[in-house]
Amino acid sequence: MRLEILPVLGIGHVTEGDDLAALIATAAPWLRDGDVLVVTSKIVSKAEGRLVDVPADGPERLAARDEVLAGETARVVATRGATRIVQTHHGFVMASAGIDASNVDKTRLVLLPADPDASARELRTALRDRYDLDVAVIVSDTMGRPWRNGLTDVALGVAGMPAIRDHRGEVDPYGNELQLTQMAVVDELAGAGELIKGKCDQVPVAVVRGYLTATGADDSGGARALVRDAAQDLFSLGTAEARAAGLADAATLAEAVGPEPIDPAAVRRALDAVAEVVTPGTVFTLVDEAEVRAGLVAEVPGWPADATALVLGTAPAPVDPMDLVRFGADLHRLRIALAAEGVPSTLLPPPAGSPASAALAL
Image (cartoon, rainbow, N blue to C red; front, side, top):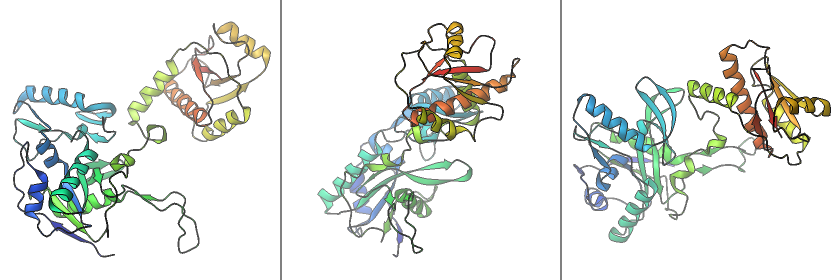
């Protein structure tokens, strides 16, 4: 495979209502079928009118930006000083929800496209129907990455090609069957396009030639396929936020629910799954003895007399506040592990006199 990365020059300033297909086709009459267009999300947002007016400076500008950020935020992931890492309504985890103040008038902010996959499909369709060009389209934006310095472009939307190249089931040269390898090829192509677009060169579109021999259907799932499901995300919160969530879990009180038949082996698998990652000193004890259960019933109103219980405990009282936070995180891990085994659980109040212990009704 030989790849070429080509700049699309001469597009100029993009404003609301501009026809991106016409701008690109006019600036790049040399486009070919099978090319991959990497289009900066900012010009898509501008053409679609995804701009908001804000004061040029001062505290009023900061207040207005905070209000805009709140509207674009589905979930706060981490906060450090003035930095906000949030999950957008699209599912992307980004600093400041991708809100951008560069390459735009000082009295305006640029938001991400409302539906980048739809934007990519619309541009691809326009180029095909009006200019007889069969190209794939990637809508890209710049992101940071956990654990690594520096920024790179990634795909927010895609049409005409799959977002992921799935190698699972293939056999490597050593005879090993690949089990996990799924390459985010549209992110790699977005990063390649950014090498030639730059940040200050006013080149908002690049063409990657040679990767595709033919484009695919528009129903490939788009870039949404790149968004990791929260249940599979092992790092869905910042450190401080995870500790706060653990504390909240540890302090949650809920009424017991009637028990369903539980497979003890499933519970044991969940216990084994978290045994090596819990805080030293945390103890998980599966309680089946009727007399112990009866004691819990006496201490915890509403505990069903025929429920199997997991009693979790740390060090005896008094408990350091951080011990409680760590215990809450351990409890959260256990509940996730139980859910993965199909075992429902309800957190109950801790037995009297045990401030760092809690019980799960199974």
